[in-house]
Image (tube, rainbow, N blue to C red; front, side, top):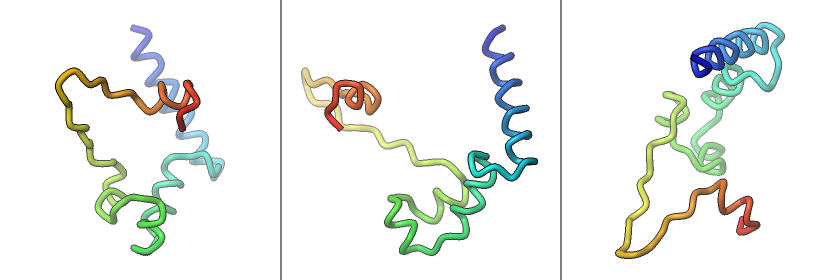
Length: 81
């Protein structure tokens, strides 16, 4: 049940940020991202389609026999990034 309450809280938080025109609002950020030209999007590292839909394509790392894939957050905590 706590998962649903977190989503409701996040929804109200996002609505509040949007209404206040906060730069932290994901809606405003997505709108600004959609207004960038292809060169700027390439600088950020996303395609025009990803900017339009607001989602990154899921990139699956090739799994090698016996290799472990470190997550970005785990690598950042370890100081690798």
